[in-house]
Length: 90
Image 1 (cartoon, rainbow, N blue to C red):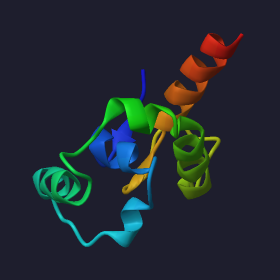
Image 2 (image 1 turned 90 degrees about the vertical axis):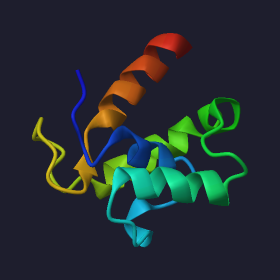
Image 3 (image 1 turned 180 degrees about the vertical axis):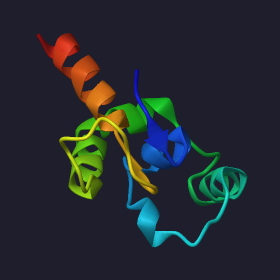
Image 4 (image 1 turned 180 degrees about the horizontal axis):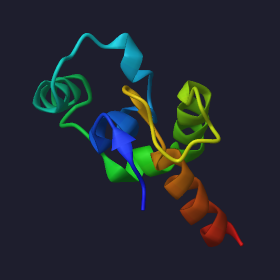
């Protein structure tokens, strides 16, 4: 199980940038902005290739790595992504 606060879509943005740079207040507004900025929105083929960078960004933004619960505007989804990536690469 993975916890994310804010929503998962914001974590996905970690593949290509830093969500803290955005001035967007809701998940719906975020999805609309990503759709506009990135030619149709989230492209799984492209973003999957960048997963290692997304994990690195999320780890760097995690102010309490030892806690299982994220603070506001942080996420632990990188742990799930890292676990899946590690099991695939073995």
